[in-house]
Amino acid sequence: MAVQIILASSSPRRKELLDQIRVSYKVYPVNIDETPLPDETPLNYVQRLAAEKSALCLAQLATDTPVLAADTAVILGNAIMGKPENEAQALDMLTQLSGKTHQVYSAISLRGREHNQAVSITDVTFRHLTQQEILNYLQSGEPADKAGGYAIQGIGGIFVESIRGSFSGVVGLPLFETAQLLAKQGIKLLNE
Image 1 (cartoon, rainbow, N blue to C red):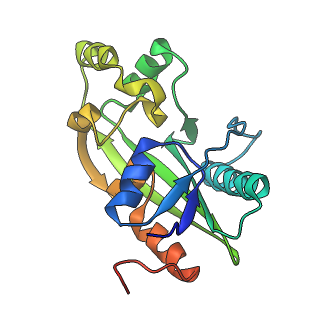
Image 2 (tube, helix red, strand yellow; image 1 turned 135 degrees about the vertical axis):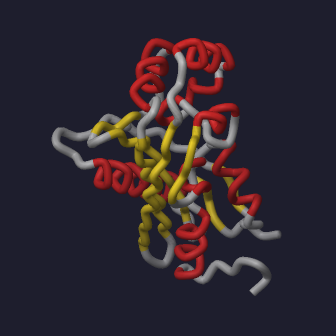
C-alpha cells in the first residue's frame, strides 16, 4: 500500500491508532520546544504545537505527501499538565487528578493541499486514588512519558471512573476528527 501520509511523531500510540483505521504512513518525528507561552490558553497551546510540528516536518522533508501532527495535553482547571519530568512530578500530577474531572485536549494538524486543524476535548473523571496506588503505579514505569502522568489505554485505565468524549483523543489521536481531516485532503479510508 502506498504511503498516504507522513506522521510527524514517534508515538507508538499514534501509530497504533493509524494502523487501526488502516492509514498507511511513514514516520518522521520532529522535536520542538513544548513550553507553554505566557498567558497561552490550553486550546491555543495544543493547536500551536500540532501546527508547529506539521510545519517543521513539511519544511524538513519538502514533500508533497500530507503531513499529520498531533499534540495532547491534560488540563486541570486552566493548568496544562505535560509529560512529567520525573517521578516526583508524576506523583504530584496524579495526586492532583485524584477524585476530579479533568480535560484532555488533543489537537491535530494536517498539511497537504491545504492546512486543516481539529481539536478534541474530552472530560475524564478519576476516582479517588490512595497514595499507595499512585506509588505502585509509578513503579510500573507507565507514567514516564504520558501527558498528565497516566495512560488510559494501559494500567492507568483503572483510575478512570468515567469519560465523556473521545477515547482515542485521550490516547493521543482523535480518530473521528482525524478521519474528517484526511477526507478533506482526499485521503480515502475504508476502501471508499
